[in-house]
Image (cartoon, rainbow, N blue to C red):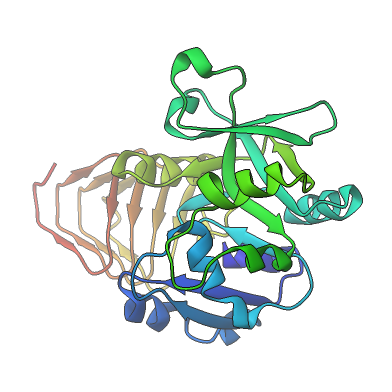
Length: 280
């Protein structure tokens, strides 16, 4: 997400942290590695979607604020969403995406000009008149947070946005057909990796690509008798021993070792893991 925002000219990011906050800070640090400024806002107790953003209010300027759910993978054109927001004179712009099963999400009903008329949270199938859901990516006027109480749980979807709608504030929906996935479950995590390897979503992959849709990191050693089928992403300093087969949709993170005569297919292996010989 940070790399994606940079592509669209964002130079300052505020990351809202709660669970494993120190581990995340270690990875991202101050953002210099990406040429941006990263600030952190710590949510001591869960404050809901809007309450968590309110918690970071001291960092806001007067410009429109882009709000991103942390568990979404997308390559949506952020610049277009911001331009749409400004052209419409919107107080809030909600990015919309179409899904097969909208009952797990929040439906957003708009008129033909894109202005939001109604919100329906996690509807039953009888209530479904559109498959456009709230994609968890917003452009908002920072002034809306005056309506959010400090240090209290408060929701964008159930409280702030419906309240602004009742007050007649201009809320718009920006429909997008860009790749979008909510990585909230292990099977979705796997699906996201596969989409990246198929080239369905624009994500920077570190490594050199070979002819067979295999990306290889630096200082990786693969025995000549090992077979790489792909698509696969193999990180840095990986060791793959003789007669091992790496088949479809395999991700081996940095420092992984795979013994001889093993067979891997459709797996994501995390950093530093050791897999023995004759493993399937």
